[in-house]
Image 1 (cartoon, rainbow, N blue to C red):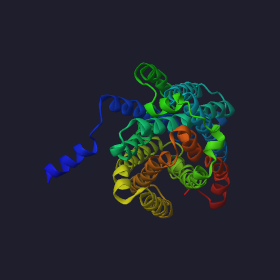
Image 2: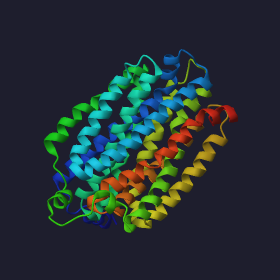
Image 3: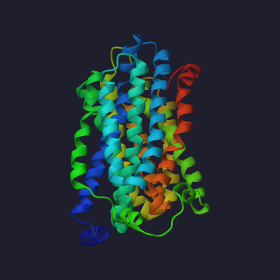
Image 4: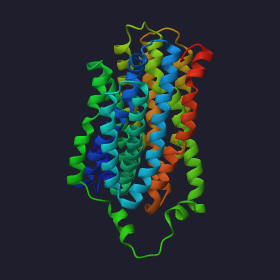
Length: 389
């Protein structure tokens, strides 16, 4: 039995060489830094906003926090669209390098903010880079990695974002001062040196750049009938994930804080975030195998059902803080990770090489415009229902 399983494993990953592994490690680390720098605000939000507005009033903190989160998502949206085009036009690796520099620099500068508008500007520019980086790594790896094990590799790649979520909780636990956590978020800028020295553009992208065939302009090719329905449906499906994530999971640290006193909660927020990230890593890791066994669409469908049921369990059964919140947050994190990775596996497969990054970027980011609107209403919903849950 072991021999059979071992043979299946070796067969699945046959054709993988050292350069493939190097590409995977570089993309994975880039995703870790994405998750770190995007989640730092969720973990640090109660303390950061309260200090910058000099108030612990929950309604005011949530109102300002909603605006900061909304402009961050707007930057993420524009970054995904802009860097998707950059990746198709100028290269996947160049897109990765520019996007990492952008979000690393402005995450660090966020730690120097003296008022909330400055923080919002830094988070907007951070969002530009993070949106671009997630599109770049998924597109690049899907083109470089051997087809036989591509779904598993891309699924495991998305664990990187969730590892960054876990890391953000760890950083906040070790450095409870929110400014120090943002300074740590600037470290990925050093990672650019490794990318510049080691990675080359994918052969598929180079082939399309060097071909002498007459090609349609990017926008005409992208909106041809064979791509248009994929763009529409892909955008709607990913938008539903984003609305659920940013209207629920990203507010769990603030929700936990609302169940505790103002002078406590840092450790509880950090532990919940770490467990959520660990469970999401498990979800991402299993996504490639489940997509190959059951199919992409069935896996996505079942993962969404899991997200809905675990959300109901978490938010409808807890009125006071207890240890159950940790495990229920982890359950929700698992299904979030599963559906996120499954979509990152499926969406790039829907487009040809020439417009793959742009098409994937549109699917992953067009829905963020809807998410921005939903996030802006969080403070109103909190006031209307009398709490975050």
